[in-house]
Length: 279
Ligand SMILES: Nc1ncnc2c1ncn2[C@@H]1O[C@H](COP(=O)(O)OP(=O)(O)O)[C@@H](O)[C@H]1O
Ligand SMILES: [Mg+2]
Image 1: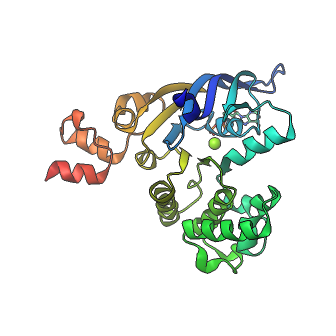
Image 2 (image 1 turned 90 degrees about the vertical axis):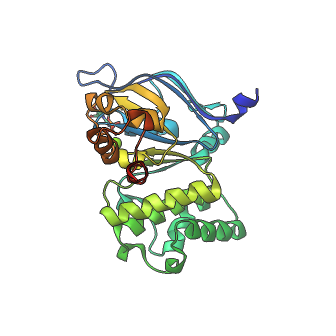
Image 3 (image 1 turned 30 degrees about the horizontal axis):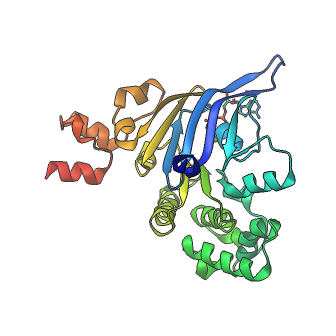
């Protein structure tokens, strides 16, 4: 029972078909099953078109499964009562790829307040949440500025703050760093690290950068709509050949370690680990 309570999300045998029954139907996901427990940091990786974004949209009820079911805190995403839909949408916050499409207000703090404001959070509580969220992403100094002048990385930090201010149980980042330059990407990865260390936030990070996936504890690999692998980060990312079979490259450090003949049992996935192994 305690184990049941820990499950924030349960994905059971989910298949998703776009335009079902029409000539151009696409099976984006096929019999996908996994659970997300409170506090987990999961990286979801897969080649382009493997079904990652479809899964992200299913997790917060933007899409509903063609077959199978998804439960968020015990509520099925097909729920129709306003109260249930509200509970699902506010439990699973999704940050998408393009920060420009996620900006809604001309003042940064108003932008961050927009989501929770829509949830009906009262003014005083809203103030508190916005300040905390801006602090968590390191953007407090910019709160009275306009989002339009920010760098890509800063804009994406504001999008993340907007989701954080809704106090979701799980944050899903759907290739949230993909449009950013290396510096912006680094900024977002630092924010994610801080969410983990300071708040213990449950995170599902969708990425095709296996270097980024190396920060997670658990990695789920999607290939053509199916789960190919689901396991501890050190096991999944060091399977160089298995990743290549689904069009993904293992982290550079892992490939270097193999090239250098360093024991594969050491499960090297970061440059830091490789450095330690060499000294
Ligand atoms: N709105 C849509 N209508 C029809 N097919 C779609 C739609 N969105 C995605 N697809 C198809 O579903 C499959 C999975 O897409 P997607 O979930 O976006 O993958 P990923 O995020 O891993 O790149 C792809 O074949 C894609 O072309
Ligand atoms: Mg996608």
